Image (cartoon, rainbow, N blue to C red; front, top):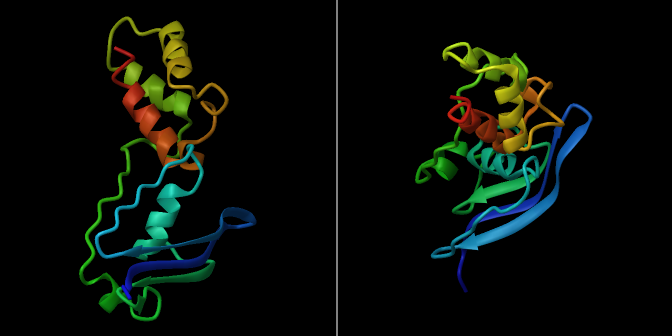
Length: 150
């Protein structure tokens, strides 16, 4: 019988009263490959951060090679390597304000072009929210859109 190298049992993550993850469970055995697929804001990056001990778990357990990530962190993480992407944007500004700042670096980029880019990357409903409220996927789309403004 194979031993799971990663176990996630009934993971929950709340930010204040907002429930981000609810009852996420899975196991990975040696040689398995797992891909996280889902829409922006579904909790993919949050799940990865919980596994790596980068965010606290509201409820549930993560075990790596049999070691509990919260109780035996050093042992659990000693053979783990990961890169979690973090686009470079001003988190305290809105998406639109970030685009305006980038547009100011170039000539001939007007409000009309910024609005076209916002529509292109499908952020119309959230462009006036602070970037700190965006999911990782939304931040990536916003960051990538800055190359489309010029």
